[in-house]
Length: 514
Image (cartoon, rainbow, N blue to C red; front, side, top):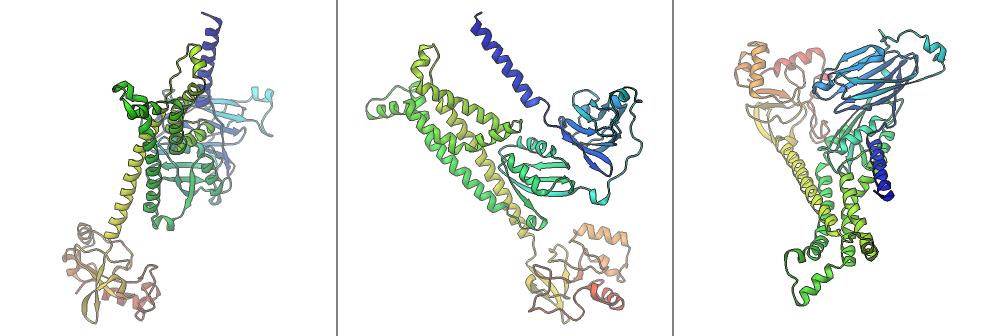
């Protein structure tokens, strides 16, 4: 074995060690947040401890909240041997472990089977004892009582719409990235709905900082509110996503097909004579293949390389990393073979090109993502159409002793609306007993009538009419307010504004259908 072989083997082993450290080695620890005199940190238990490195100060109570999101046996208990703690972790629940570390140092914690491991880093502060005092310090014991956070220090919640998620594996990477920020209590990312929910401490981190962290990871973050969620923007945004992926896929297919012809024709068919043979020979030229493959990788497949950059920047990996590194290696090797092919062959190295391989990989992955985006867009449209279809178009109201069918837009504040069995509830109302409820099923109404007893509302027939009921419209219109062309009846703005006697009379009047 020559010195060159030994050098290559050593370089390969060194590269393997570096990659293991880069992806699986200790990352930046998460500092515990101080709340009401207690250092708090939330650790997600799902496949591993995330984060697996927590930094705290010595001499101050610590509360570790283990958020277990799985039911595997290996994570049903956490053990901190240096503190004498062994605590059961119920599945799909959060369990707090409280203690006070006195001596600086690094203290491991693990599950009962020693498969999940983490490290608690205790740093000295101004009140921490010196090395001599630490050596003589008594055994550290769990803290019996730790103060709870005040109302001002309780977590708030922020919702974000995430754009740019290219695979399901980005969920863990994004949750891990946000979980490292100080003051973040809980992170939940849903790839299907492209939503991220973050519970955070307002005094330590802000929604703007959370959004900036998401953008630095290579995604687009749009803060959402309840009103924005009600106004569904899923369909138009899905359509734009489908159009973008379809455009990139078409470009990739148009340029990949000539690459395949030039690279594979001579392997499956004899070279044809005449102009067709000249065309195939031209497509087999490495420089022509370089021209065809470059737009496929760096236009159609640019998202893969962008995702690879951000995942490597955060020392994580996902499907983008696999695709980016694989196609990038094929492209770079082919590029070297194109410009230095003669020199490589003189060195005894094969100088083949693999442009078509990289282009085919990008095209097939784009095809899968196009189908996925279309499925999501179809689901969003179907849900929106179903929601519109569930709305009532007309309402049966009692006016001047008669029952009339009118469009829901013409219902006035104070109208008595009749809902018969099987009909859709046309809107928000006040029930005879004065509570706002959504429409209920026939079986639910019968069960409620049975629990309330016959004649509970003063008329036994109300419980025997298979769910029909009458309610008074208290709010109408898109904003639940009376429209100018439909003035409210006197005293008909709802039961809130009536005096007690009028409220009782109205309840008796609308308690059941006559």
